[in-house]
Image (cartoon, rainbow, N blue to C red; front, side, top):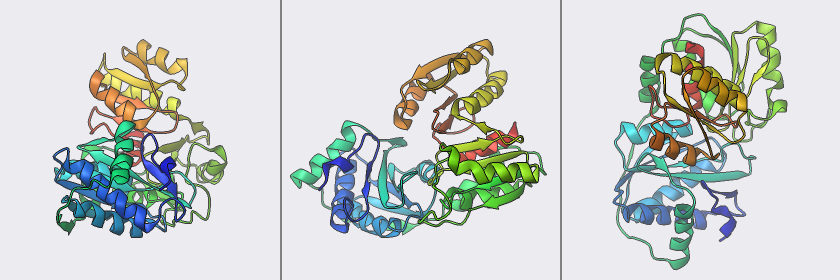
Length: 344
């Protein structure tokens, strides 16, 4: 076992070298054991489109059930859909198998207890359970449920978008474009699609919208089609990239500023959280618009925790994680963020 796979916010490593079937099974048992010791009895389980994800999904699921935890299998999904499924099915937690924005030969596991992702010492506890071999034993059940329609219906009923907007959507061959494309068309958007078919090899460009080189074709298409906006997702659709109608990139703090103004008009005095890499302009603008600006540490788990503590309605990072809690659940959802952008 390579101890380096136990990171701050997830378990992540190189396929076969770090994450082999035996390790993935033991990790599943450790997750199930960790969960059972916290009175978690039912978890949702999802995966992205990486070439190894389906196999890891099946193996980890067996390990989790061997500890006595029941599984609700939602199959192929975006990470925010996994978060949504925990709330929809009133599960006690969830596991998402995803390599996020990492190279194709990586994969990983994001783990939720309740609605919150675990991090730090809780991730290290999984390592300690595996090392000790002190696993819980049981016979958890498994059932398959579709979350796609429920997720899309929820978003469609909670956002109001004017019909006829022209949008270029770059899915980067991750899962986000696959699920967002029919939803945008349902809203009446005229969508030019770019790499919205899931392909775990990511043959066209790397699914990371924070890297300018990955946005070149999207920028060109926005300009050529005279679109109202261009939208890009990372591999598991918890991070967003945005191109304006003029073909300019809106970076994370600029996008957060736009959302903050919109929310503060309707919720004066609301707390808005940025992170240390965000510009001072953002915090000054929040204060100018009758908001309460808060600078916090980067990291999606840390941001979500601070949002709850401060009862903040919005938060964001330079990396494109945007968290809405004014009309949503407060987790980072790039598909939802793109709808809120088009609503403005």
